[in-house]
Image (cartoon, rainbow, N blue to C red; front, side, top):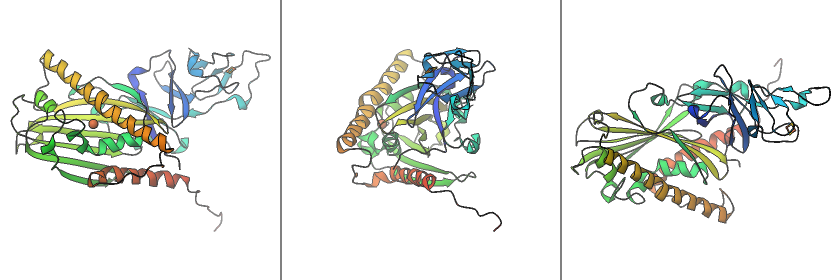
Length: 361
Ligand code: FES
Ligand SMILES: [Fe+2]
């Protein structure tokens, strides 16, 4: 069975990364998509494969509000219509037109709808308004990268943060944090969508090194929490932080992490990330500490999470694909399992034939 949901919004890129006059190419769920801006600032997304001989349009150039194919010069507008044929009589037939995808700019990201265009409702995009222009907090760089991993394995990683006590031992967790209270909660949104929360809370423990550096740098005990919010197909927000034992969270340090997972294909994904610091604790203003923090964060991801999930992916590849291995479940897997179940049900529902309505009965 496919691991992709069609009728949903996928993050294609950070809005600021799309410059006027440039075409960007992104592959989402195996579909190549060319994304560009019109002069009025609006964004457009069309199939990144010319209807003539299938050249990538993203290698072409923007002419006004159109893209010119780099191979033989057909031009396409934001609706995917072929509008210029420089050859022969210049005749344009409907077979030359390409598919246009609904695309919206929201929460400083560009979201593309892959399914039926008439069902594309921007209100279905999960709330990432804390990323909006002018929202409070101290922002990290809005970054993105490609990982050689099934996006669902990355969601498993984020929905089970017990791994911080082992994989990131000392840095983001330690053995005393194993005994966390874990709460798993589903919320049904007015749209009918399910939001899943997986929250880990530990009281009065020594702060993991990274939080200690950001908070008071005194190794005194803290209360700590990480509330991971998940929405299908792969949108996660981690509301995490530390505070003095027994004190309200907003008196301490709050870091909201954004983890936006977009499948490129069955075994590759785009990962868009950005963190926002909130709460009463002042942002780090010492250059040396800030430099250490950024080095340690990079280390945790590049040297610990990334090699781990990519090694898992290779295990699936060796076995023959995403369904070829059956993991043995532990108690820590409840959050990841719940998310996988919700996603699988949504994908299965899309595969069902539409109900037949009989006129006049
Ligand atoms: S492949 Fe695009 S015009 Fe020929
Ligand atoms: Fe991790």
